[in-house]
Length: 277
Image (cartoon, rainbow, N blue to C red):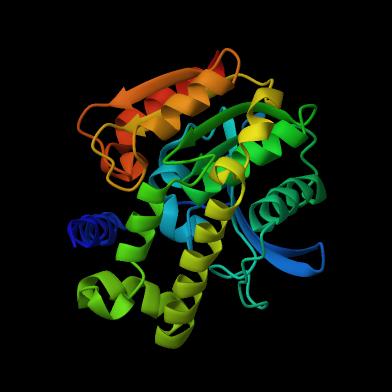
């Protein structure tokens, strides 16, 4: 229940901070048999792809980044993974390879948009997708920033996921944004499928999602973490730092899971400094 209260605070904070932002291009492209929705802001030489969390979209997850990252230095692209946000149909499903499928979709979308090289900023599930994409596409990815991401699933993680499974236990304020985007039934069913989908990795050796790929990541990597994150325990970012050669770990002492929203100014400054190095 404590985790439910935390998620509720995230959604309430996101709702109160919702604002308009300038998007130069908004559209869909057919990639790997699905129509993927994307947004683009800025005209800078350094292209950055934003990868959202579970059931998230560029619109819901990255307002402070689309609006405030330096538009003269960066071209910022956000996308909605298949079955999420405006990349529907199809309905979202969660086969064992769903993170690898998202990674391929994301990279292929960027290539279809004409971006030969780009950096990745991934939050939560989007961070996992970014880790896989960077490992498998070293010639395409300039730099990598991840936060709220995990490369394996532990028994503790399973308990956290299961505590969030029943959306009828969520407060109305907590459910409303997702139900407005997806409709109550699609949201309920897709969230339950997500819990099952992420939980299935516990049956793999050491619960691995992509642990074996981490040593293959060769681009400069920045790992960010909220010290008070109740969704992703601290051993997850520590493993990432230990496994990715030359990576850095920066901790927000009072941060939780949504550091890019709660501390958007500090977050954006850290990311811009890293990307500009």
